[in-house]
Amino acid sequence: MCSSLNLVCLLAFFLVIGDFASRAKDLPFDVNYYILFGNEHIVSFNQGRALQISMDKTSGSGFGSKVNYGSGFFHMRIQLPNKDSAGVVTAFYLRSNTNRNNHDEVDFEFLGNREGKPYTLQTNGFANGQGNREQRMHLWFDPTADFHNYKILWNEHQIVFFVDNIPIRVFKNKANIGVSYPSKPMQILATIWDGDSWATDGGLTKTNWSFAPFKSHFQDFDIIGCPISSINTNCNSPNFWWNQRKYWKLSSKQRKKYAEVTAKYMTYDYCVDKSRFSTPPPECFS
Image (cartoon, rainbow, N blue to C red; front, side, top):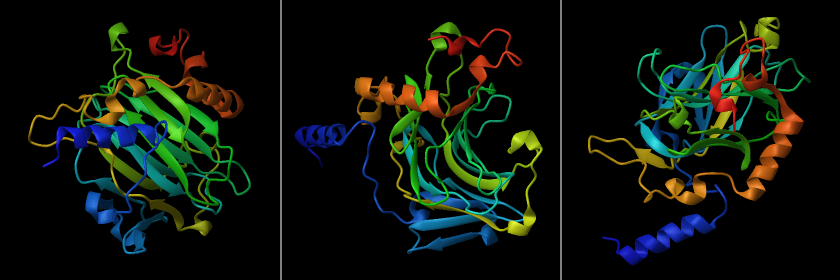
């Protein structure tokens, strides 16, 4: 059994390894995850430490975590399809098991494009079934050339999306002004599927099936989060390092990087889309 001193030392270790950074354990896929669908479209490598999911005209594929989580700092290393991938959607996200009318969800969605044109990264969030919070940006690197880190910090104060440890989106908890905030237990999911009705150029550019199968690759299958069990777990406890005050808001250095990447690479923000919202939603006001 660990002593209280050892627990303090362990916590201190996590806090000094860097803002929102964590060293992943090299675990096989099946320790924490299972195949959701498309078994015949999934291949594992390196003794289960790397996974390829693919899509052709018959089916997509995907995997999910074995348990649900109530908070955490969730991550995945992903390399996207390197062919003409218009219409193809690769997603890494959290989602509650409740029905669509009241579910919670936090999304990374990678929207494919014609070869030579940039991928679009779309982020979105649903709380109690309410979504329509899309933001889109082009990445500052080629996400098909190599693996990159994609992370979601989720605590009761904020949700932060990271790309290679750079914050690209912040969704603050503004329940005090009536804005729903994701609070239901959520499963970690990763999928690849056909979204050519909307994903590329608003659905005008369709999937070219002659380039199928489209393949996405995943690494890093350890999970840093608070699992929901039959025991009543307080996933907002400060005993979990990602819930501590340091992680309630971005640091000054992170705010600077956040402002830089959103100014340079963001291509769409629902908060300023007057065709959809004559008055911006309340969470859009700082």
